[in-house]
Image (cartoon, rainbow, N blue to C red; front, side, top):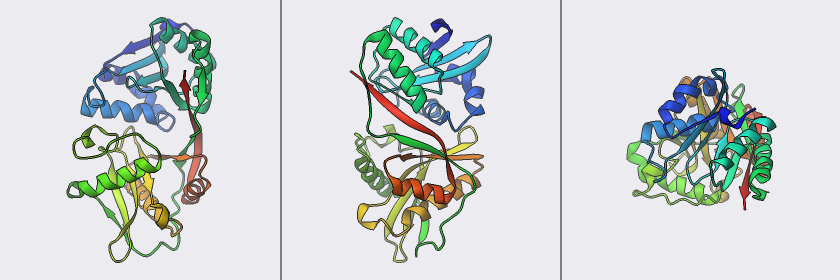
Length: 286
């Protein structure tokens, strides 16, 4: 594997023209590449910062084998790589003078790249404590019985409520982001559709969001219940409702991430019919 087999571009349309079919061939494992490429395609290259994004395609004899994307100065995010491919990418980026704060990918890929980056640059990788598990929906099995109440899809008129719930979720997961009317359009939360679970008197108790349909797949993203309201089945009810809506919207695959250290949420998703696709990790470089 030669490092010059990697083709780099800042043009998301060129990236998708080269690699779109490859990414859509395994949408679950390529969920992050598909999601961020679509966000940049629809919102513009400057939607998430002043520096140009970087895309890479590993291509030999006209066949795509892997890709990566990076929203500078954020993490490098490759699709699954063999150790040889990871080494070639690390060598290529190091030779070009790239400086990377971290890598985020499926666990085996992230580990292989972190080790290769250390070999080529001397940077020391540190595995983040927060590690994720990527699930794909098999047969949806809604909870029985459902908690009292109903679901309500939030619309444009509910923006203040959407921003409140997303802000609470971001704080709960330790995400360093400001969510208000001035920043909303530039956040990763702005392109989702949100559903609340409300008690019979209309009190909102849990929220779930879903990304747009991309490559035949929808990612359920943002599932949150305030700590004092947990244990009543609200998260299961609203996640099942959003999963059902994703299937009704035409998704062939429905995926979501869960924190591997949270046995409650992992057990919940498995009861709903989600099955492990892969584990996900990030390494910071110093």
